[in-house]
Image (tube, rainbow, N blue to C red; front, side, top):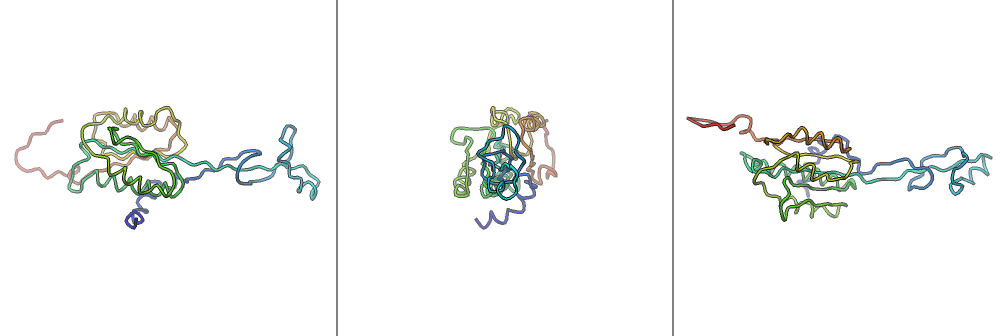
Length: 218
């Protein structure tokens, strides 16, 4: 838990204030938090007239409220074989970032969903809510194994399904794929999510130590 606290700064930079955990939306009449008064108009629900204000001011005022809605945090984690590589294993680093993001999301009362790409038996998506689910979330992260190939565009479409977003979608990947990951990110935006793409690379990806005769395959 202490190590997660140290990752808090990194996660906050990624979230950049996008995830509030609770979003207040104005509702006229019913709700959970009192927001303001408005002048009574014909058709307003009489149940929400503030009769105390009427007795003091002689004006018909209607109470307005705000409801609090929990936001979604979707974490798409690239679990293809290219992530299981590097001087410092890229998958391990991606897990650390995902752990920090999920930790903060759960503490902020967001609904956190972990979506491995691709989804495999025993490693399917998992949903979590509440700070008491942090350990379960971390256990789900540890079960994700990097192997094989992934079509990021198809994996993102499957992860979103028919839902329409009102939260933040974070894609953690090295983006070393033949699929068009730009379309995957565009799909998330069209689905209504705010999108953050985090590219996880090793030094060897950028500056490989190559000596002698080698054969490069594109």
